[in-house]
Image 1 (cartoon, rainbow, N blue to C red):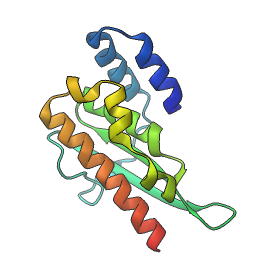
Image 2: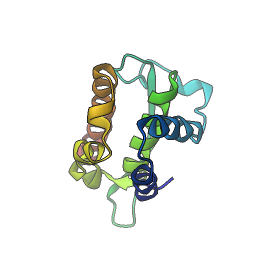
Image 3: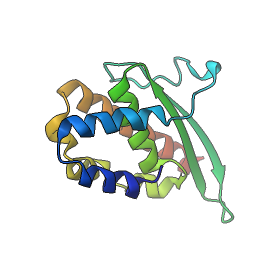
Length: 140
């Protein structure tokens, strides 16, 4: 799903119960990770729930790194947050990933006010991991 579509859907949902249900539905759209992707190396540190992130780096026609992410979590709402984050970052150039301010986008969606501190910390850890993967791809 495209991030602009997700943001539009959030805008039409006034009630936070509906937004939580929407996040859970987003999580259900994630492509399942292969069994071998559930490794310690793919585990995102700093999340209360278990979160895994698999990264694939390719190059565009100009040789710039493009990153494609797949992820999963053992918690429904967190899985939705993973889907939201992947919609924001997956398939983009490493530089675009570094330059994108997820905190501002998540704040506009109201996530800062409605997520528990643990979920907020986990979401920040996921974004930090994605940005670290982008910096590594740029340096390679």
